[in-house]
Amino acid sequence: MGICQTKTKNVAKGSGQQTLKIHACSWNVAEEKPVDNLTEWLGLDRGAKHEPAVIVVGLQEVGDQAAWEETLLNVLTERGYARAKHRSMAWLYTAVFVKQRHLAFATNFESETTKIDYGGPLSNKGAVSVRFNFYGVNAIFVNAHFTAHYKNTDDRIGDYGEIIDGQQFRDPSVKSILDHDYVVWFGDLNFRIDDLSKSDIERYIKRAELTTLRPHDQLNKARAEKLVFVGFQAGAIDFNPTYKFDKGTDTYDTSSKQRKPAWTDRILWKVVENKFNKVKSLSYRSHPGYKMSDHKPISGEFEITVIKNAPELPVIFTPISLPRSGTLASFEVSYRCDARRLETSTRDWLGLYRSDLKHADAYETWVWAETGTDDVSVTFTETENLSGKFVVAYFNRVKNCLVGYSNVFEIGPK
Figure 1: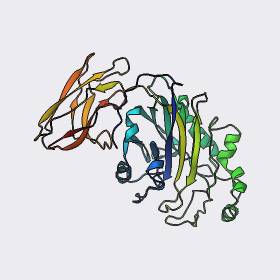
Figure 2: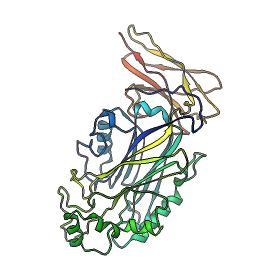
Figure 3: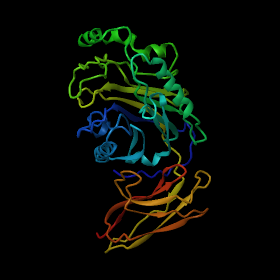
């Protein structure tokens, strides 16, 4: 499955609609290393026909980030996804993976971080967000870790406000988190269960009486009082509290601290209401089979409405077709930048990628970009040892993402 190069013209909303699936995953991994099989949590356990267009991963309390990055890349690139953007702060990590056939329609990535300093200089609380444009709409995903402990509900509400106030974006169409067409907010929000003892909570869980527990949930109560997440929606909590477990088990905390079970891990969403933007919640669940952390991972899948014929990319390549007899030491690539829609930089560059592009840094070789009002050319050299299917992509430093893709072409002997 290769990169999709769009040929459509600029269109307005209403000229056509389609729905695409987005899968959001959250997990406080408690400094543990990843397990090999993450397919259920990532929404990849139902066959290729049901795989989402976008998978967003949010981790909290990440110890070995490199191990998690490697595992996620291995799992998702094998299934035809490319990592379009990732960002970390302290022990928080957020990554967006896009199906390759949709990658050309995911542009203008930005990310912001907010550190909550209630815990002092070593605090691991805060938020890492990633936003981007997708088929003519925009979306943002906020991975957050709020202040801990049962009595700190007011601090958690304050964390939300600090993140909302503190994150600003360069895109002229959106200044803040809440300006986006689609907002998905997830993470270890640390809200607990009021008024009930640990033994009471565990008894209701054992009896599958979650309806008795939900009214005592601090986040549900705060939202009902319009203290936090005003205008957001949330799916019904039909799964057991995801915190706190003895690691490696399904047993709630038996340590001397005897922490009460709680739905600390949550996913909420918000949509700018109009005749076009629509969200349908397809699933909201925990994944209790994963036992290495003291939290169970959660996921939510959504169907969103986007433009069927999205604007073409601002960098358009002349089709590339190379001779395939013998080795090829160099070749030239021509392209044009639309100056009306792209602010270029002297640090823009082009990468030569395998056609199963994994992420922007996975190039075989690269060259600095040339800019101009007409077609310009660059030359890739030292390619005599390459063979297979490739694609050239243009990386723009201003938008901090790939903003143009060539056709897929072959290098090497027949």
